View: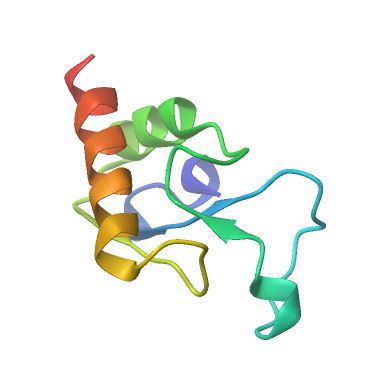
Length: 87
């Protein structure tokens, strides 16, 4: 989608998902497979590289549900993303 729509996408909400769950756009039990960014199955290096190339300006870490407290989840995601973009 980033390549298809290019500079039209300027904001990204970053979510990760645990393995073994089907993709879903629904809230409720189907959204309980979320995990911290970098702890799941999504290839963030590829996505963020493409996002940078296509002009994404802002990123938001998002989590619908999780196994750890919200601020701990944010810290884990932040630490992962900081290391990833510094590499």
